[in-house]
Length: 414
Ligand code: GLU
Image (tube, rainbow, N blue to C red; front, side, top):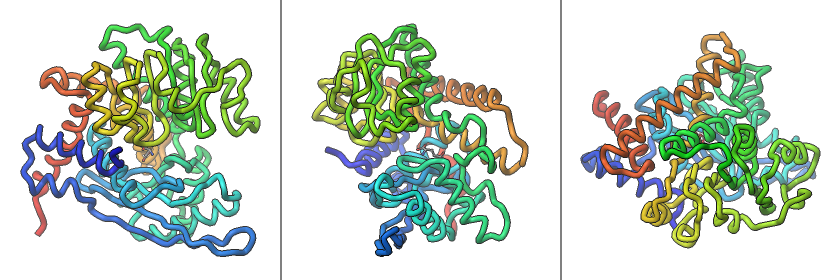
């Protein structure tokens, strides 16, 4: 199976070939601008000391400051963070926001830490990467295993060192300290808009379409709820504990409430059958939303997928080998760099509001997000139709093309 970095580089190769990029520029775009690896020593609650590995990679800075999330996950490593940073570069260029791409992470399982330990890891990590972050340099945000509380601690750590409050250093913060209304559900709302754009183009009414969502977390949980509220029938969802299925449809809002009340997995929810994560991917549904981790759809299972549309809520859920099989089978893949871009889009809105110290209503945020997503889909589908490309390659060609253009226009120093 291809790793995230192999996948990202192969996708770049396809876009570079299509754009006719020269080898030198191709190589520049394949190489991260800066990769920082830091030690994150953690004093555990029992007094012992554990040293974790942390990373921050700035893939590209040609179009503006670097932007991207911070992931806390035991499997996080430098190569994965490099791939994720590269995807952020194309994502920001594709949706037309003035950032380069970055990503960060700490190799740790946040579920095994107490709240105090989590705070100490976050603050130490923030202080270790402090030399390269800042509102004009690189702006972190939540990703897998991190949330608005993580961002609050990062913002506080940075501000305490600066000696004044710097709200614009991170996005995805709580609204009470400069976060944006609508940021919490932004990635999920964007997934819904992406899904509806693809269905509309195919002439499919979204009401009643059967949906399966892998990853009932920050992105997948609310995506399931928004899709359900808009009239879709969400028949299956899953998390790390496994999946649940009800052919008559689930009520995602009730399920989210059940989890907030203390359940640690969706499995066992009354009135549902238990299925595995692998089975969920192969269910007979109209729309599959992989919203968990990368590499879950690959050459080993792509032939068994029955959904007609795959809307990638996660970053990198489909490997290039898997993609080729899906394309041959006529399955429409709405690619990650577009489908999950709602999060970074509203991060951009948050940063703009912080810099202006002037805040928008939730309707204004949601309306602007909808316009941005619909415009990006039009650009991708127009190029795909004109040049006979998959939506993935069309999205990559637009994103990579804009970054290549910025490089050419700025020229090489010295
Ligand atoms: N982690 C999200 C992503 O992968 C959001 C990044 C951001 O808002 O900067 O797009």
